[in-house]
Length: 91
Ligand SMILES: [Zn+2]
Image (cartoon, rainbow, N blue to C red; front, side):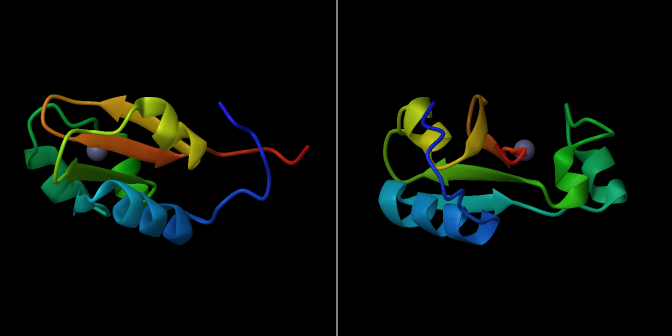
């Protein structure tokens, strides 16, 4: 993990993710009602707070380390990556 600063904002990290890795965002904010209908979703999902995105790629998924270096916490699912922006405390 590269902890270099400055830390990217959420919107900038998503932009770089999309441009560099040909990623498309398929889910972001969810209402509780919509979230509850999704198989396997957590009632405390970060999507309910807009703090997670799901993405798919045009080609093969990039190495997880590359995504971590953009500041994302990565959970690789069967058909998408679930990404949350790390909450960093100031040094
Ligand atoms: Zn997700």
